[in-house]
Image (cartoon, rainbow, N blue to C red; front, side, top):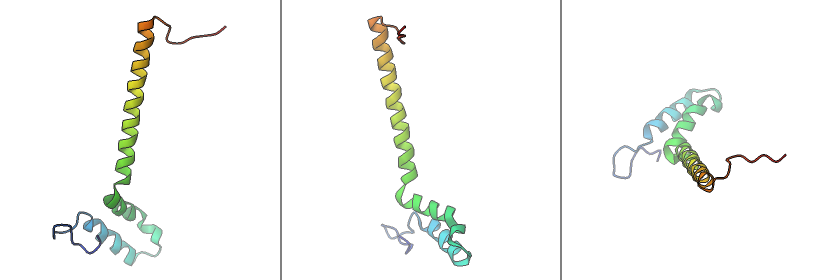
Length: 86
C-alpha cells in the first residue's frame, strides 16, 4: 500500500498518488487543503467513483431496454402509448 511495494515487488499502482498526498500533508496548514489529492489516492485504492459510474450506466441501459420493450408491447397490442381519462 503506502510502502511503495506492489504485489509483484514493483512499485505499487497507487504509490505515486500516495507520494503526492503525503507530501501535501507534510507542508500544508490544514488537512482540507489536500482534499483532492486524498480523493485521488482513495479512488486509486478502491475505485469507488468508477463503480458508481458503471452502476449508473448499467441502470440507465436497463431503463432504456425496459422502456423499449414496453413501447414495443404497447404498439403490438394496438393500445395508445398514453391513456387520458376524461
